[in-house]
Image (cartoon, rainbow, N blue to C red):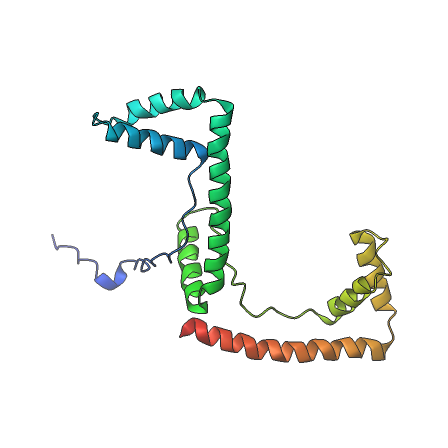
Length: 199
């Protein structure tokens, strides 16, 4: 009986190349994580053999019996660490290049395709912002005028839409022209930004 031909390399599905994650600040451990880490360091320093499962139970009991003030001290440290982490993350996002954003978002897309959840794409705070449409430019002017401050957001939106519908054509054209000029500038900025992302 003739042998079946071996599958060629070309017929095998090609796995996408794994993209390395960019360096980002590390999220701090919780107050419990800090306490447990300190407990483990004390055990190691004592020269006693370390059995993580045993020490986990011991630390959990010690944590449970910790005084409110002592626990609060750990929670305060965690809050301070978390605030520092948020600021470091913000600073890191602002200093990242368009190319780094593109690469990181490709990596995140790959992970989402493989089933990873809760991993949104990063938004570059330095990326050019798409300008407001003619209607939203008009609505912004109305909102800033203060005439509609007494209305809630839904009522304001309805009033703006009604006013826009009844606006004289020359006034509408003025906002359309403002949008067109802003859009032209945006396209130039976006092209320059996209060029940096592929550099």
